[in-house]
Length: 253
Image 1 (cartoon, rainbow, N blue to C red):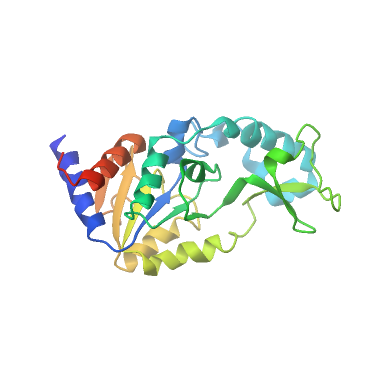
Image 2: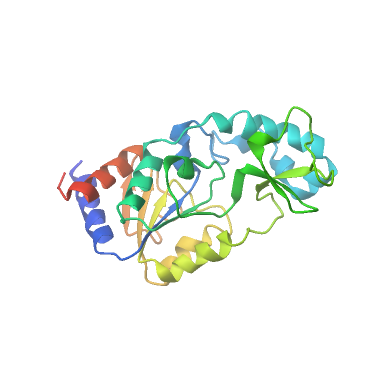
């Protein structure tokens, strides 16, 4: 217990003395909101063939792909609510101790918690896009009872505005995220394993550029013994709530 207290106090001092702090979040931060991660022993890919999110498969079999997309992202994910970790990051941003969030998640929970400066590296599930005319629609305004949904303007099948396998990372999220490698002083890695390319490059490049790395994870990741300076082991809700409290009242544990 003393070890985590000392590490938290060290992290607080680092964050307070930094001019720009950035959070880098993965699926682990949303697990406590009821969203299963994609990878790992309880991950979605152990239950469902990920081919349905391959862009070529989607173009060839849009109805089959959309049936699973609707079940997972619009019948299941949509019920999730932000947890204490999301709210802690939003409060840190309001108080000026966090300047941006780079998220690999597509669940919109950071924004629902109140975070403003969020770079969605893999896009988002709240909008659908027409790949032909590029018109975007709010997902909750589109009838998903008839699949696949089609663009009201040109009739083309609509696609969720998140990255499928075989697609590039969207702009400006891609550029904004990599720009933080030079702008930020501290990176807080939260709930990410470091297995997903090209997102996993960002923390490594940040470290190569001399940035300080704080990691919050329930178990060690590929970052823990390579680039992490302070490893805060535990649930994101507990660790970030305590970190935010310390940053607020300037007290020791």
